[in-house]
Each structure stands twice: as structure tokens, then as C-alpha cells.
Image 1: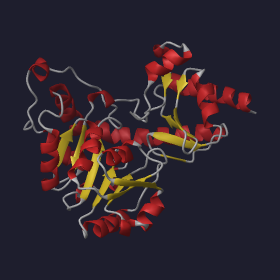
Image 2: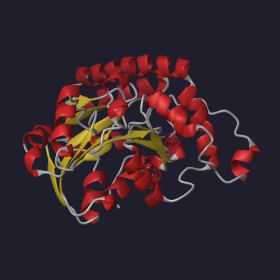
Image 3: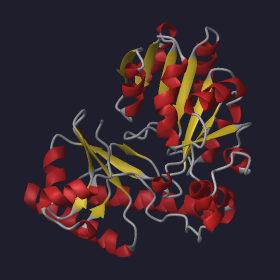
Image 4: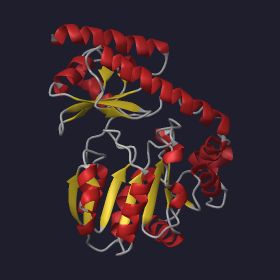
Length: 330
């Protein structure tokens, strides 16, 4: 399997520091999670039912004509390539590596390219996979450019697949509202914005025929009863969502400013993380890990991704570590 952030127990073992002592900034997950209420016993005791209103609540939240709940967007990432015959697929790079991995495993010819090359070379591709905003670089795309890209691909039976896992802080940039168009597929995740990564819940927004094919491929009970119960309430909590969008933007600006102040100006980022390209990335990662601060290390290109700290004590802890880091690396 590919490497991902959040491997806290492994880091604790490697560095000999108890897991409870770590500040985990490796995932890009909102540290101020939606407050989960008590889950009724029936959610655990009965089989999940797909007519419980979750798909409709999600459609209203995402502004999509129709949605399919799935076991995290990862489930769709793995299954969607199996719904196409062998194709030429372009995947944004650097980006979430599971996309290219899944398409290759399904027998497709995959090229990983920077965003500008993907758009320029659309004519020879059958499918294009973008992450918007991108992870880890934070690249953003204009709506008109994305719709033009989709039109070019769809005219010859192609797909535009957009992973919007980090879109919730800027919903006005989403293409979920256009997802009834054939060949346009938008993935959303409940793990990042709502801080509910453990629920393994996501949604696919697409045309009805494709959603039906994907539902058939995934089979019944893609989400657990407790996850469905929590999501129905979280997706409907508009007051919390409004407050959290503003809070995330403020925190992202604070993190970027902190990194700049310590000579680590971000190369990109989003409301959920900041990304720093640096030839010393591995050295920086190790130095922070020895201080029980876990970041996400990328080898190609050499870079670090910093998620948001939670409470003020975590912000002070990161500030102190970055100051110490500067002294060590001078």
C-alpha cells in the first residue's frame, strides 16, 4: 500500500515517544471536528438503510443533483477505474497518489503530469484526474477552464474526475452543481472539513447512470449505520459549517504566517494545510519528529505538508519547535 499521513502509532514506535505525546500535523484533517452526538443503539443494531435521507441531505449540502454515499472517497477512487475499458489517463502531479495507483492497477495507461500540462495535452487523453484544491500543492482552477476541459473530454466519451476532498471551505468553487453532465465526476469527503476521518465516509456526485453503475460495483451497505446517523446531522448543521469555514481560513493564514516567520514560506496550501517545497524536507521532518511533531514528508518533490494545530497549546508548541528548528539548521 502507498504511504499516507496519520501513521502516528508507527511514528511513536520509531522515535520511542508515546502516541499521546505527539502533535499530529500530517493529515490535513480539521482538528476542530464537528461535535458528534450520542449515537442511538439502533444505529449499531440494524443493517444500514439507503433510503434514510442521507443521499438527499448530501445533495442539498453539496449542491448536487444526486449523490452516492460511499466508504470514503477512497472507495470510489479504487472502483471508478474498473468502470472503463483501458484508457489513456492523465493524473495531476504531485497529488494524492492513490488516484494514479488505482488507474494503473485497473490496467489503464497512466501519466502523472503538472496541472498546466494536463490541460494542454487533453486532446490525447481519455480521462483527466484533478484534485481541487490540489493536495499537497493547493493549486486551484477556474470554473470556466474546468468546464471547457470536461466538454472536450465528454465529446469523445471521456471523463473529467475531480477530487474535491478539500473543497468544503470554498464551496463556491465546487463543480458538484454541474455533476449531472455525462463524464463529469466529483468526489467529496466528510473526513477533512468535518474532522470525521474515522467514519470513512464520502460522496460521489455524477450523472445517474454512472452512479447506478458504481453502486452496483460497490455493493450494499457501503456506509455503517453509525456513520450514516452522524453524517445526516453534520451535513445539515449549517450554522457550524458557516462558522468553521471562516475559522479554517483564519487558521490557514495564521499557519502560513508562522511558517514564513521562521524561514519556511509555503509553496502552496489550502484552508486545511500548508505545503513547503524544500531540499531539506527530510531533515526538517526528522527534526520535528524528534520533538514529537509529525508532518507529512514527500520525496518527489522534496517537501513537507503541515496540517493545522488545534488548541492554543498546540500552536505554541509548533511555534517553539520552529524556532528551535531554525537555530539547529543555521
